[in-house]
Image (cartoon, rainbow, N blue to C red; front, side):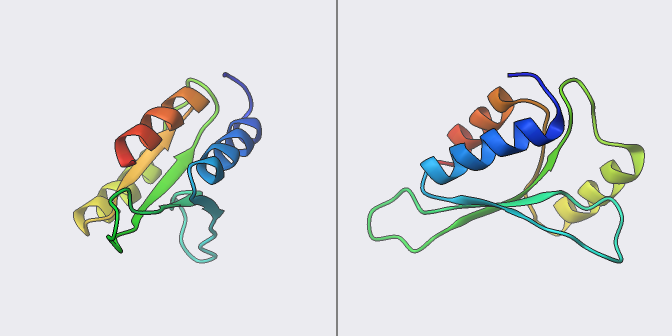
Length: 100
């Protein structure tokens, strides 16, 4: 599904909730370039208390992260944070498959 960023985000929120998790909108008032959302998914193993948490940057179809965003994402990854850039519902579905 291609389309404006907001349409992609809405469908991905629905998919995250369908998978038993959530895709929370986050804002960092004094920090430019941070990802848009926090993806929280439940553990997939019975009896485990591990939750999968990662950050997601949404873009319009075919658009990549800005140079500044790429630097911020690299800094977060160096701290062990999972960061993904999603520009379609299909790429989000791939992310969900990898996380569950």
